Image (cartoon, rainbow, N blue to C red; front, side, top):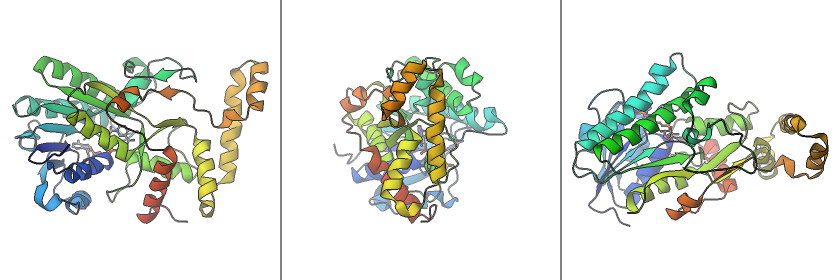
Amino acid sequence: MSGKGKVVCVTGASGFIASWLVKLLLQRSYTVKATVRDLNNHNAEHLLTLDGAEERLHLFKANSVEDGSFDSAVDGCEGVFHTASPVVVSANDPQAEIIDPAVKGTLNVLRSCARVDSIKRVVVTSSIISTLFTGTPLTPDVIVDEMWFSDLDVCKELKHWYAISKTLAEQAAWKFAEENGIDLVTIHPGLVLGPLLQPNLNLSMEMILKLIQGSPIYPSPYRLVDVRDVAHAHIQALEVPMANGRYMMVGRVTHDNEILKFLCQNYPAMHLPEKYVTVTLILKCCFQLHKKISEWFSFLRSEDYKYEPTYHVSQERAKSLGINFMPWELSVKDAIESLKEKGFLHF
Ligand SMILES: NC(=O)c1ccc[n+]([C@@H]2O[C@H](COP(=O)([O-])OP(=O)(O)OC[C@H]3O[C@@H](n4cnc5c(N)ncnc54)[C@H](OP(=O)(O)O)[C@@H]3O)[C@@H](O)[C@H]2O)c1
């Protein structure tokens, strides 16, 4: 579908996902009103070089925690994509630095949207994180789908501030949308990978970098999805008239050692810390000790244990939006090439 003559807003436009979203929207001839926190910060300069930016990209200053900050950016829009949110796992003051900007920011954007008659739909970037923490063990027979909602008590017990922020923000968004007649769709990506358009390193790409460097910052398994699929899903969520509710976006749930094995095979020059690969395998075996001994031996003999996804995430609804998930290997490869090209990885 062509976006010619249509105006949309993207909040947090300088971010990893949003940069791809802006790029694809401009490619489709949309006029894009893009918000950044600081117009003098050079982190949005890459957007100005995108095809179509000169004619159809307009930058606005907006901060999630300032009331009315998004009013001018959403004015006259047909669709609004709200991606801006702190993507960090730790903070000195999690309430002020992670939770408030996510929750108040979402409500702030929706409040601005509620005042604009031309807005037909709002697409909010949520996360797989707002679905996973239910207390149900994630075992191979489990398929996580759009009916899963994270339990705040579970998130709090884990002190997972980011999960709390995304869960609360999503809950607040649905409540506000219902009360104010806003057509809302939420997108729930896993760990987003792929080529970087922005100059800085965002958290999900840093996670892959740290995994390669042998100091992972997030435990396996990884729920991989390509940034281009995620950006595409946002656009489909606006353009497909029947789109509604929540959409899970995970291409593949996989273990760290499967990613490392793939990298060892394709990038021998990377000299991955083999010791680390071995240690992860040993740890995996230890985790299985709780299984009955007989099961454990047949499990070990099966060889599949090393690479079997621990659970599944439903792709049914994402596919109904027109998403054909890219192979995870391509996303990892493109992520590596991009990290190398931008100078974050040397081999
Ligand atoms: N990357 C992933 O793996 C992943 C997975 C699931 C969900 N998500 C969600 O997708 C969205 C984008 O993630 P990303 O990975 O693209 O993140 P990112 O590159 O870190 O970008 C986040 C953006 O949010 C903006 N932001 C942060 N705090 C803000 C505030 N107080 N006010 C206004 N803007 C603020 C930043 O804007 P400035 O640059 O202007 O400061 C930045 O552009 C987030 O909602 C995140 O929770 C990401």
